[in-house]
Image (spheres, rainbow, N blue to C red):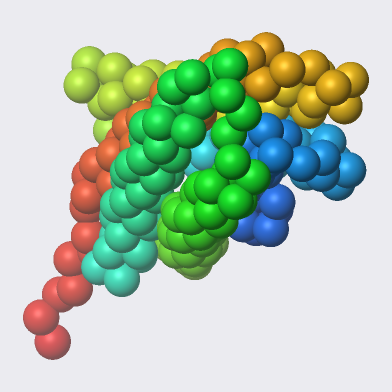
Amino acid sequence: MIYSRMFAALGATLAVLFALVLVLWGAALVRAISVLAAAMPELARELNLTQLAALGAALGLCLTVYGLGEAQRRFHVDWLTKAGISAGGLLVVVSGALLFSGLREVQSQLAGLTIDVAQAAQPEAVRRLVSVGVQRMTVGYFTLFSAAILLAIGVWKLFWTYPQSEANARSTFWTSALTLGILSALSFGLMFYWAAGNGYTAFHQAATAAPQGDLVPHLNRLLTKSQAGAVCLFLSGLILAITGLGFRTVNIPDS
């Protein structure tokens, strides 16, 4: 029964580390738009770090969902642990919503800049769009980082919690919820990984002086896949919040 806590603790710790990497370099998904105006030599490295961090954060969330789902059947927790895990899950939900809204706004503005691919987008307009997009992405990533810290604190407190005598049977609802949470977290990582791959392709095409008309489809696919990943992150956070609320609290006897 200790394995559930170990899985959850390992997952939350990984989520903290890789969410920090996303805070520092994950906005490369939006910086890739800068290839429409100027070359950014450091972009390829940042996109590679984003791919690694997205997969790492997704793995961490998968382990956290699974570990908490198992621990929920075996442990009674104090209200602070329950609140921490639930609040962490809700912050993941907020993070997904912030990332989705920011990416959607960037894509709509990009469509306005490149509505006529025969006319090059103005560098100043591209830089302004990238600046706004980076700010929104950073806020979303920082919210994810804060959520991972709350989850880690709540999960690590489980090591000071005594298990119940027997594990409760898992209902069909919880089996379905945990499966959805794990698949959503995994999909988040894969979507961000593939999105960064589209940015990498646009970067290399820009390095060979390809016309803007060839770059725009890759950038649109990058933003579309990123938005899908943000929706998956939203769903995985919702499952984490529900799982946290599903923990039963310790009954303190009257003195």
